[in-house]
Length: 163
Ligand SMILES: [Zn+2]
Image 1 (cartoon, helix red, strand yellow):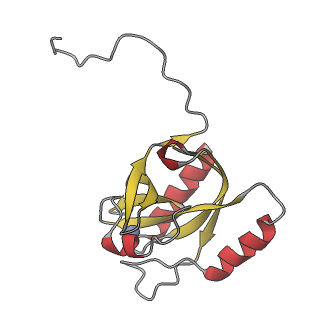
Image 2 (image 1 turned 180 degrees about the vertical axis):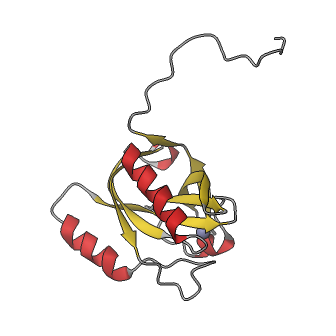
């Protein structure tokens, strides 16, 4: 699970809408508890990056200087660079083949925002699983920190439906 502060998620989607029809990108800073698919990734800070890819409409490239600056800054703290985000203009939030090729850091979580006609419409959170042969993305839940437990109660029924 990846947990954002509500403002962060709004800021990321906003940045992706502003960058449209180009891709926006940036880094996520925070902490990770647990491992595998059970890990809880808490985002404490987002850092927007300039998209350095020559063709920003289909690719993204995070500024390596930003990554270095953050790693230096975070050296003595409990936080680290724990993930990245980018947008998919006019495409689903599913990771692309290019994304998979660049997913060589198994510790980083990915957030992908789908933007259609300048509006963020869908997002997906992913972690990378690697075995000896290949890497693959696994979708994980995306939540905001104000997301409480759902109250126990009867399941929601659609109107006019019989159960
Ligand atoms: Zn992508």
